[in-house]
Image 1 (cartoon, protein in one colour):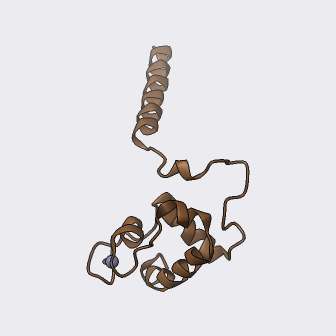
Image 2: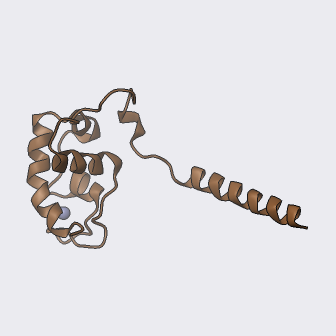
Image 3: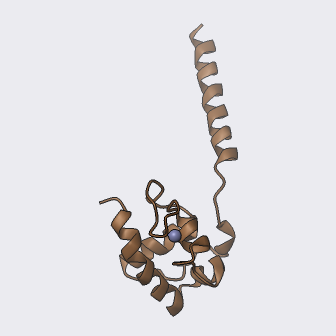
Length: 118
Ligand SMILES: [Zn+2]
């Protein structure tokens, strides 16, 4: 009987793993063409590097508050949609972490940090 229970537990775990694998797609993975090298911006100060990766991955602690424009604040809103903070150039240019990106990160950081986890 315990073998059956163990088998069902393993089968259930595998199903949960497969379900998570299918449901959670890694976003923006195409911007990393060689994962064995340091990505652009690696040498930035930690604050900028962290923020850059929030925008690269579309993940960040900002979902529950309103942005200064009155819309729900999300990483994609700040980067792609907001007329006050939109990054012109798109994800690929952001990923390259050139001077324009660093200036943009600095400009959005003050707004972003006020609503970030303290
Ligand atoms: Zn906004």
